[in-house]
Image 1: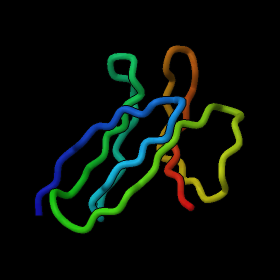
Image 2: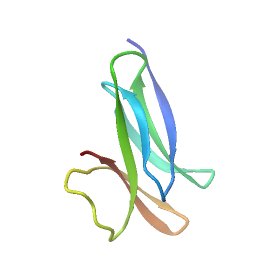
Image 3: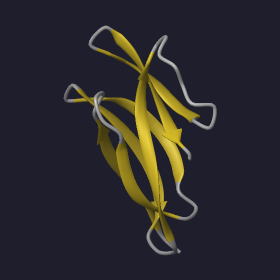
Length: 86
């Protein structure tokens, strides 16, 4: 089975919901062209499921079920990427 690295831009003011193939892996979050960008390794085939990611500011409340994926310094602010679960 093959896989590829995909990138997704996440906005501070809204969640990002994307279908991901089972077996995906979080790789990295960084700033690209002033956008907060997340890179994931995703298998080319398999069952998919929707996953939701949100940016959380330092000091902001976080749901107990959320899982930290990465943090980034962008334009003087530190942002934290969380995968949200119901």
